[in-house]
Structures are given as structure tokens and as C-alpha cells.
Image (tube, rainbow, N blue to C red; front, side, top):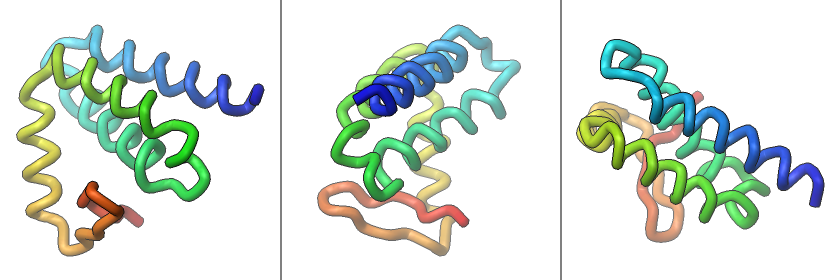
Length: 94
């Protein structure tokens, strides 16, 4: 249980950092967004515990920085490693 809470606190910290940044820190915001997707939806063992929290945090970032959705969709279409995971299709990073 403690590890789960630590993960959520860490994800929340990065999400709040990304939400509070301006567009000039675009690369940081993009990196946090992609990492939240990876941890919340693609990392085995994390999906069951962190997907709802990651979804909420991604929503917070995209509410502050709506352009990040276009970045993410573009990243999906540019990637040659598209994978499906249930109802979510996203990129596979290495």
C-alpha cells in the first residue's frame, strides 16, 4: 500500500510541476505527459493501481495546456511502434 501511495505522490508532483509551467517549458511538459501515459497505462503492474490517477493527472495537464493533446496525437501517428492495450492505443517507447 505504501509503494502505491508513493507512486501517486510522485506522479502528482510531476503533474503539478508540468501544469504550473509556461509554454516556454514545452519539452518538460511533453516529457511529463508521455511519462504519465507510460506509467499509468503501459507499465505492467502499474495499470491496475495507477490508471485512474494517471488519467486524472493527464486531464489536469491537458486542461492547463490543451496543445499537449495535439502533441500526443501527433506522437502516436509519427510512431512506428503503435500498440493496442484494451481500449487504449498508444505508442510503445523503448
